[in-house]
Length: 213
Ligand SMILES: CC(C)(COP(=O)(O)OP(=O)(O)OC[C@H]1O[C@@H](n2cnc3c(N)ncnc32)[C@H](O)[C@@H]1OP(=O)(O)O)[C@@H](O)C(=O)NCCC(=O)NCCS
Image 1 (cartoon, rainbow, N blue to C red):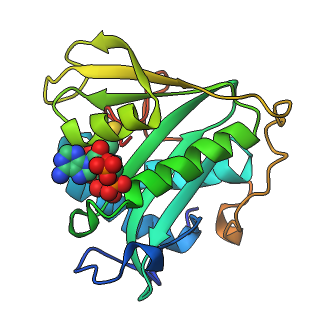
Image 2: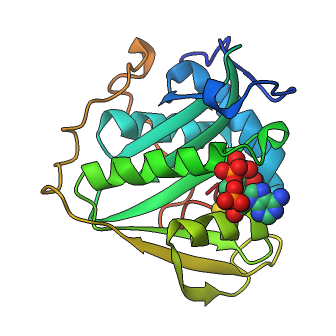
């Protein structure tokens, strides 16, 4: 049984009047899921994840297999999200999204920095991602961050667009944490032990593609 998501304490979208410094990053909570889903639906259209996928991702945080960060402004509006899969030495960026009204204020860069730092802290040795060939904003952000294109995957997205597979090597500062050893989020009682399964067919790459990263 899946408990109700929301009512969310945060709102998504709307004008973002604050200076970038007023944007706060924090771990994603259960109450953010509806807004995170809405943000993805707005930005990724056909490749957006269904809500159930974010529920499944949330459960994986508790197992130490994911790390998700949201950006909120001073009024509590959710303006961004980033998530990374950290269950092996190769971390996979699952999603990176900033609400349109907040683009160009450094929020994407901050979310990416936090996400990469999380992967590094968990002992991952590299971060990989897919980005659409026709997404210059994101490509620029990743390139400036140090990601390098490894390969091009033709027609990776539902739109038929190619994806660039990019990679950033990490400094290894500590041994990998075993899955489950990282502090997890508060999971609603209705979900504990429910064995929620992802709605994405297994084996389908996650992230930008058919993914949100
Ligand atoms: C890509 C995205 C996350 C960037 O977020 P953002 O908060 O606007 O990014 P930032 O303000 O931190 O800018 C970081 C970099 O992005 C690039 N960028 C920002 N605005 C840009 C613009 N108008 N044109 C081109 N590149 C731009 C620049 O490289 C910029 O670095 P700079 O500030 O040193 O010039 C955001 O545009 C977004 O959510 N896009 C839709 C979803 C998406 O494509 N996600 C990534 C999927 S792989």
